[in-house]
Image (cartoon, rainbow, N blue to C red; front, top):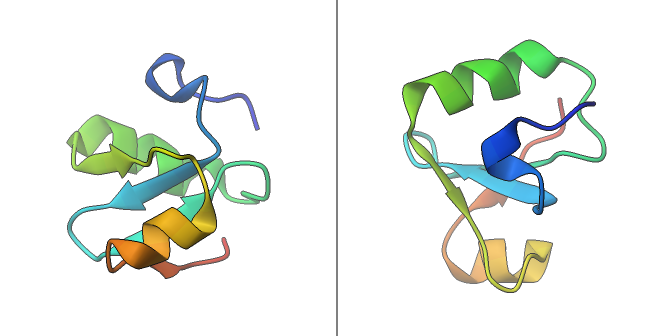
Length: 63
């Protein structure tokens, strides 16, 4: 997947509306991420790890 400019340096992105986290390296349906970026309701993590996303209450969602 080609990452949106706002997410170029990140692998994991969280959806604030659903508390789900997506792995941009494994996204099969790019429309999900495009809609998330358009909504501006996303969060990136520092450090950029799945463990950090889970520490903040986000659950992994494969798409």
